Length: 359
Ligand SMILES: C=C(C(=O)O)c1ccccc1
Image (cartoon, rainbow, N blue to C red; front, top):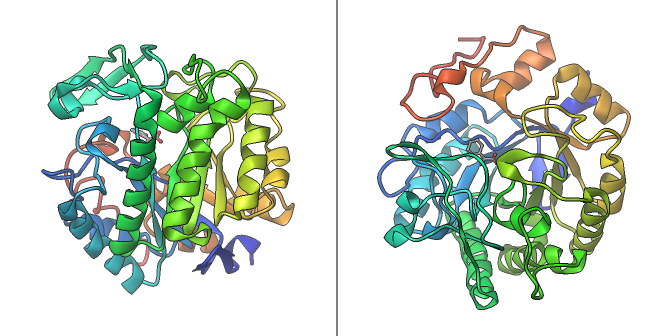
């Protein structure tokens, strides 16, 4: 059989196989930004993944950027996640919470007191915000004062502790896809002239402060991190990503994190958006478990593991329509195609009603 289905370990977390369920926003949280009750069913249906990474989950009210996404900062939200982690563990699975602060990818309608979204610099991103009253153009964000950063770092640490209290096996720091941490990393969005901007060392600082705070809170062996060096998602850009991310990963390596999750290319799109970008240099620099993501199918994933180009492979959209994706890949069964119209928002249709083959 494929090495994709052999057990492995990411830090303290023992995994039955090397298949990860990638974080998938589904915009189905209920009032109070609490996961809906059926989230327990949705995630448990997919618990044969070696590791489930939850949908992106905001660490604070300020960190929210879309309607109906769940949080993990209130007691009610922590209580709302407990049935999810219990159901996944009961089904033999493992699940980590993806900790999210959206930075400028938000809207005053989604912010406490209708405040401006925050960012490293006051640069309006292209694109639209998904609010409860439809899509609205992004607004110019407020540049954070350096003095506000410790509070945001503390919010990540608190969210990490909340995740363990909710029964998660660990957390993934969302440092990808043009959200807050990525906004600080990339010079297209970070024009700061203080210790958080300018040089690569300065632009990597927030990522390192957040990651260190999470490690201090719950341990490196329960802390993963997601990066997307060349994605254009959410108007992210950098003039020279290779040295930036080489430095970032070399700075992360001594922490001995549970894993590095790498979006190879444009998120959900072209893998060769920057032809020749050397992801293997980053895998080598990290030294720990490397989780490859973006457009993998079974054949590509099997080859990547066999050829030592990945230790784990994360699948996103295939897990939406195939709760039993692992079994289908093992048996070579055909995969169901997800219905894009029910990716975000709605109820059980397109969420918990995709059947497993055995059914
Ligand atoms: C958290 C997301 C990401 O990481 O791209 C996301 C958010 C909304 C829709 C799709 C994806």
